[in-house]
Image 1 (tube, rainbow, N blue to C red):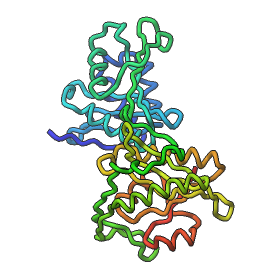
Image 2: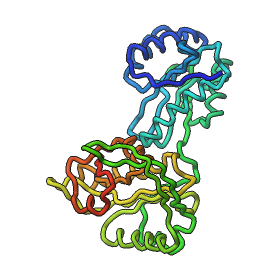
Image 3: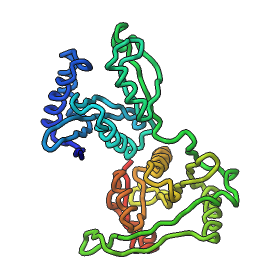
Amino acid sequence: MDYKIIEINDNNKKTEYTNTILRKLPKWFGIEESIQEYVNTVCKYPFWAAFDKDNCIGFFSGKIHYNRTGDIYVCGIDPEYHGKGIGTLLYKELENYFIRNVCDYVIVKTLSEKNADTNYAKTRNFYKKIGFKELLTLTEMWDTNNPCLIMIKNLYPNNIAFKELKISDINNNMLDNFNRYQEVKKSYRKENGDWVLKDIGYIKNWDRKKLETIILYFSNTINKGGYVFGAYENEKLIGFAVLLNEKFGSRKQYIQLENLHISLGYRHKGIGKKLFRLCIEKAEKLGAEKIYISANSSEETQKFYVSIGCIDAAEINKKIADDEPYDRQMEYKI
């Protein structure tokens, strides 16, 4: 059977669904005070609900700490629907939200194995199946009879590392495994002041000569005081972002993100968002108010930048815009 997973923005619905589901789970949520706290506070956080036809059968809600760590705030599945994969579907929606917001980890608090409760043993097994590991137990968080286990999931594979590149990192073979290939089926064009999606397709790819040009570009950028950030799988470069160091704009408020690319096979995994976050952190240290992006017109590229909070630039850099007339000039407010 297919179940619908829907993001809920109506605060009254968040409260209603939370109250209904938690009261069906007395073996997990048996303290009235705790239920009331969740019901009264869940409206502040992102919320996804699962439905069988029009009947809410479960939900997940989460929040973010320090801009880096997602937290499963509260969740529950109607007992009649346990074991049907609904929790996994709901968690995936919440995890995607954390990835879009450039979190590195997700945590969840549950009852430790030091308490022999068999229902919570099932809960811990569920979290393990979706990638969580035990981090630590805190007896002082709740009480000694109910020790709190904090579990954690790394949103990026352990073999993917991010770093700011130095000149010593630049070498002639660093892009040997990088695959720029992108088949674009639709692109945006500006018509009468609006961005309209058109059936304009093309293929983007880099040959060896272009790759050599990019490597030289990395060196020149760093030598001129700019910044190159890389994502590596083991020793293989799979993504990069280039941030220039020259401020511009009426108040010198902008700094330009000149390039951001992810190798084919590694896209849609949050790597681009992580690289963008590194650029934000660097730009903030440099005193910039906004990041300026000349965004490719492809549907995929536009969706990426919009998803991370970029909007049309308040001020257009004419030189940059003239270089790529079909690009959308965008900004990100730091």
